[in-house]
Amino acid sequence: MKTSATCGECGIPLGIARTHNWNSNGTITEKGDPRHRMLLFESDNLDRLWRRLSEVLGVTLEHLWELVITSKSHATRSFLHSSLPWWTNLLVHFLGYRSAISRVEAQGLLMGYGKITLGGQYPERGRPERVTVFIEDPYSLPLFCGDCRGSAEVLERRDVEITYQALDARRHQIDMTMKDQHMGEGLFEWREPALEPGGDIEYERCLSCGSPLELKRFAWNLDTGVIRDTETGRRIALFGSQGLILVFQQLVHEFGDRVMEAITEIERENTLTAMSRAEAESGFEGLRMLAAIRGMGLITRLEMDETGMNISITNPSIPAYLAGLALGIFELATGIPARHRMQAKATSLDIQITP
Image (cartoon, rainbow, N blue to C red; front, top):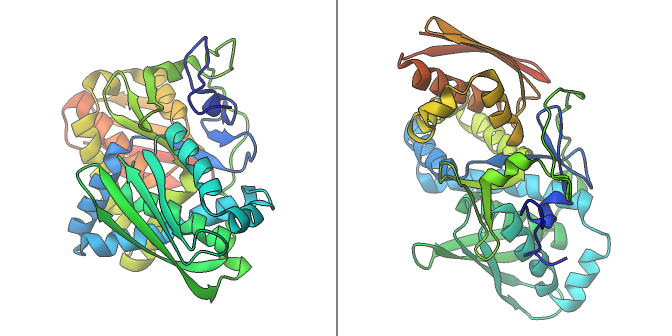
């Protein structure tokens, strides 16, 4: 199936419609691997998140990016380790990386990662020592670098060193150098958090491809690999939630619990800057659809007035992020500065907002 193929009825790329499920429990999962949870995430916020975290934590952006790249590579290699066909490694070693990168290029255009091209491989056949990839308009440069590193580590079963440089404002070069050290099988393992089944979110479905018609608000540019929300202009990307979870876990390990407090505050800032007041005031049905279509979880309770807000979410994607989103929504809707408390369990999250 061509990357550019779209549904004749609703216009959603068939590569998305045929490989992903939007579920009634507020999650997005892959049809081929229902354990793999996805997020339709506003990627414009990602690089701002890394920049603000470096400021709040008092570390250089380069050091923070290094941690992000390492954590994202773990998530990528664990996912690919369980999903790639057994013959992929043989194909790569006999024909070179171009065969594997062609799949990555197509996937990147569908998922909103940007335009990916293979720069070269040395040597051209057999086991490589170095591979160069170019990315134009990356959804997040450090996350994409982690994707590249994790992909190479799965194919090579070796440690990979990665370097990157900006060629201009939009285009970046990424070089991967293969190391001699072999990676043990334990470094490829990851267990997805449990999900609560069921749920009552209902989507109006396309009669042709089965995608939620709510996805029509997003425009896929399959030439550039950029997805945009046509109502807000904000950029979106579709990627695994485990990537962000592992990144945040690594940052907490390095810098302590203040990381999650910072993520909440930064997302509050992002919400106040990027979300419209109409979205914030859309009520229970509007906000639960906004969360579910993005795979962030199922809002089961929402009470809001000028005295505060109480919200309950089943299958929350990233609790600290959702708390910041809730804070921003309350402040946008009421104009009142607020604080929060939250109680997170395995498959549920309760957030209380007070002025």
